[in-house]
Image (cartoon, rainbow, N blue to C red):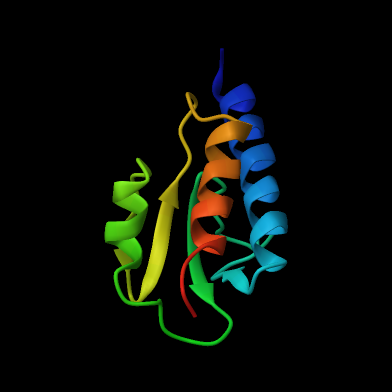
Length: 98
């Protein structure tokens, strides 16, 4: 497959994720085009501040695996992820209480 194809795939998924989440009040810590950005690792936070209580446990219950760092959700995009995974994450985050 090659590193370039994997990087391009991660970038496509990352942009899809960020575009979908901006509409519902989530933002990336670092823009994908920023110097030092890793397109396969995306740290997300709420525009309103802290994560809603139980965010990670709700995502886990929905079958979504991610972590947290510094009060943000950390999403790791892998070569086996696809657009349906991103859509599921967007849907799960949009259903969280404020």
